[in-house]
Image (cartoon, one colour):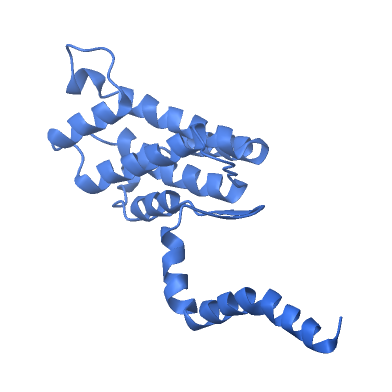
Length: 187
């Protein structure tokens, strides 16, 4: 192999990687703005998960109005939080499922109010009826919907969804705020 053939083969093998590198460098800002909207980026064995729904739920939970100090029941919530955080250390997915179960427990309190004739209504149905009766606002309904979506992603993963402990803790914290809000709704 002479030097010209070697250089030609080298240029041919590096052409596409160099083009991709140049494009990434040129369009790094627009590409960076797209990352929050990605749900999954996969290239060969490299797979990165972006749980946008979790971030949306967390933002909505942070925007809930603060409860009056007299309404807060710290013992129950602190105990629940400690239990869920303990579960998240062992199994982040299990902690998300258990957290959602606690949201459903709070929603079931409203079953007689929203539908006295029916004893079995899914949680999304209870939320929908609470919204239609103006017991909860659209922001809170949206928060519960986002938490349900993240729970469904955890319960029924597509591909190799890996939920980190940090993501589970974010979900738990958002859910605790939602549970606190639900516990303090007066009918």
